[in-house]
Image (cartoon, rainbow, N blue to C red; front, top):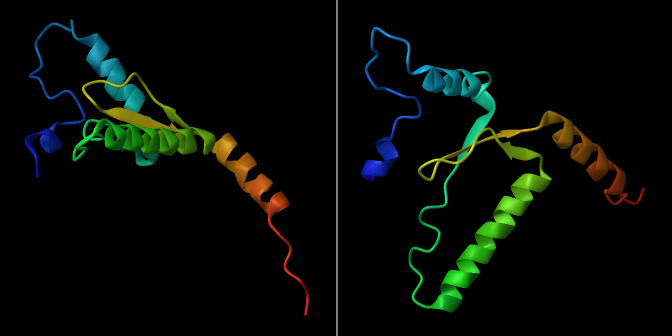
Length: 112
């Protein structure tokens, strides 16, 4: 486990008597609306293990395809990515439309 894996997801700074840190509270409230459906996306180590630029390009293209798939499945960032952490939530309306579309284009099995 790397030290980066222990980064807290919420602000853990000590509270002060004055309420000058309202931005952090607002961000935490926004994320906690439905955190059960939130997923984290990270891209810090995509290029690790690449020995050539061609290998790096292949890894980056693979990750881009993965992210395109997430987008096509209705995933959206909840807020701007920060320090390599992106919080995503799936739009249920997009997921329902895709499920319906898959039913419509699914090949019919022959009756026996």
